[in-house]
Length: 240
Image 1 (tube, one colour):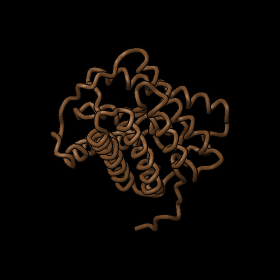
Image 2 (cartoon, rainbow, N blue to C red):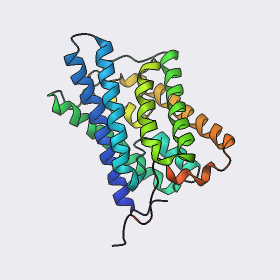
Image 3 (cartoon, rainbow, N blue to C red):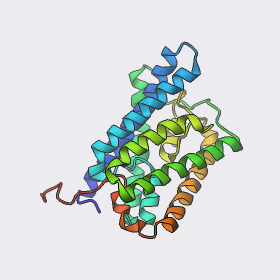
């Protein structure tokens, strides 16, 4: 368990999630503007920026809150005893509010409307399957790497997210908070609000499936759950 107080952890989750969404939205806008209509180049720029930003943010905020930035990760962590269920609402609330703040920040930096319902259609069985696979893979990477090489988790997560942008039809949202917030930006990174429920259901199913699989593959997994996403060192904060 983290030795940091709940207010510090909640602020870390809010800030990290906000910066993550600002990275996703901002790099999407910049990539699209500079790509000259080449969507592959825009997506590549968006993927690299998101993956690199995620590594940096996990390293920065992980020692405080675990750097979940994702309700699916928080729920999985609580399910394995890595955090108390009573802490989940505060984490999820911080992630959701941080995500919307980050979208507004990303839009503002490029002089776009702070909030606008997205018209980017992302619907159909292939998209929903992609989100299930993307989130399953994300949790599999977290649980698999955390067991033996916890310090490598930020890099593994960043690498996986970068890859998943390309091998999934949905470009791998893999995060309910990200999904909801991206419905509020009518830019490259957006998703039509009507498509968000299917994405979120698929994401939660994928996260649950990966967690159940690794709980069976690695019976000792609950012992490493507190190290998601990075180790929480009890000596890092002196009592005040």
